Image (tube, rainbow, N blue to C red; front, side, top):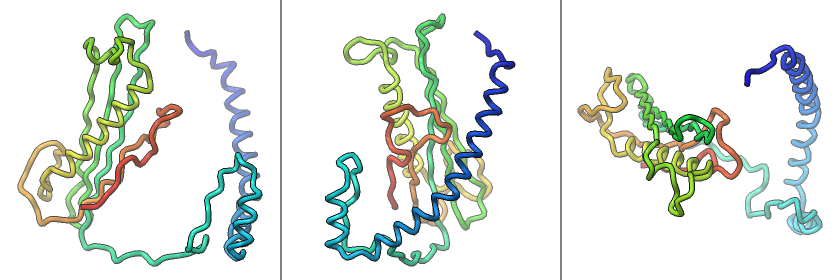
Length: 214
C-alpha cells in the first residue's frame, strides 16, 4: 500500500516544528545539568553516598569511585602510524507475506592506515539467506528478528577478525579484500561493530561490541 503524501507532508512539517522546540528546550537544560554535575563533584563522599541511597530505585545511579566525577586526563602520545579497523552491518528481515521467504545480511568494513598516505580499504560482504537451514532455528521455527540480529553481529565481528589477521596492503592498493605485500607493522585498533543506519531493534547489542589494540 502506497503512502498518501498529502496526508504525510503536513505531519512532516509538524515534526520539524516539534524537533525545533525540543532542541530549544535542550539548549536551556543542558547548561544547568552540566552545572549539577560539577556541583556533585565537589560533594563530600559521604554526602554523595547519602544522596545516592535516597535516590528512587528506578534511577539506577552509578556508585562513586576514587576518581572525581569531573576528572580529566591528558591524551596519550599519538603514534606516527595507526591502523584503524571498523565494521558495520545492516539487514533485510524476512517477510512472511512475500512470494519467497529470505533475509539478507550486509556488512561493510574499512581499513584505514593513518599516516601512510594509503587510501582507505573498503569492503562489502552481502549474503542472501534462503536455504532451509538458514531460515529456521534449532527448534524448527522460522527465524525471528533477534536471531537475525545476532547473526548480523557475528558477521560484523568475523569481518573485524578477518581485517585484524589480514596483511597490511601496500600504498596504492585499493582492493579491501585481496592480499598484497605487508608494510611495516602498525598498531591495529578495531573500533567496533555497530549500526549507523538506525536499523537495529530493541534488545540489540551495544554499538561497540568489540574493541582492542594489537
